[in-house]
Image (cartoon, each protein chain N blue to C red):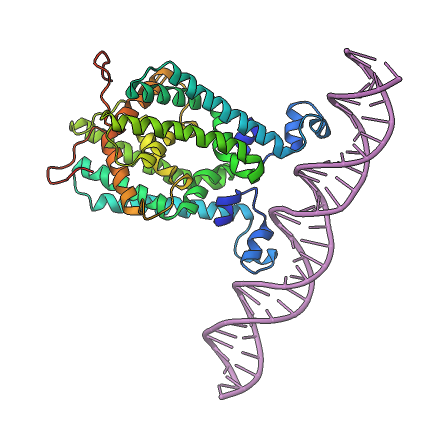
Length: 186
Length: 186
DNA sequence: ATTCGCAAAACGAACGCTCGTTTCGCGCTG
DNA sequence: CAGCGCGAAACGAGCGTTCGTTTTGCGAAT
């Protein structure tokens, strides 16, 4: 995962991976049928974790679309900031896979996207959100999370919890959603 | 550029590039000292175009921080949507370069980032913006542009000009900036 | 107007090396 | 003793690059 994230799939050799595992290259083929299957497993697991994390967050969020989108933004941000290497592999290196091996991961991804769109639609229908375009807005929400590994690392100046709060705030602003009455401002 | 964008630097061979140029692989070495120099030139030119486009937009924007950030968002979005292949190469494949060859591009990138941060700071100081964190907000503004190539392509349903307007709107919302009096809403 | 000279550009072949993968035999474990 | 995981070695293919040579295009000189 670390190699694929930093050097890319094609920039990583089977010998590189074997070396850090203190194995011979051939030993890897007892566990995976090919180098590409190693990547496809990583990508699939990454998307599964992402999807189940989002679903778990939604389950605890109640029925209010604002609470729901807050929960999603919180989970999305925390995940990308906590596992930046996996996030990079999942989001960038998936394109190195053949269509066949990428399909399971893409299916999960499409499912998660649909989840977000549903919440946006419901929030708009209920008059809680006001957005210029559903797909473009959902893509923007996704983007600010996906790009986290490219600039963020936890520090005293900006700890993880602070980043999460910031992204939740930015998300609500993009939706023109007002926090629940008990909530404060940043 | 198209090869580097779709297959990645390490996924593209010199023979691949030579073939689409209808040349022998060796002929490329009359123009570039190495494969890596081809990428570094692409990345450098990409960042130069990006930086000069932002600066040109700023030059025509006047002194109002709101107009300035609108101009930047407009230019940033339009550029990434118009040249998605170059955008991908610049933003993703730069990591395939050695530090030495990446340095010129990274310097330009840092300069553009500083430009955005200055405008954010001035807008905050003038009370026109209200943001939770300068760096995180600037990164978010950048992110929604950078991720455009991963989902957008022009269509009748969402033409380029509409995408630009949407991103400008989302940008203003993230900054809690109110459009100038003559401006309308989306 | 034609020829010459030269530098840039392209060719075709080859170099040394690394790639992903396979084979095979050994030794440990259940 | 059956089976699996691993090491050692090797496979063919493809990699980026270099080499010596040939072709090309164009300004200067006849």
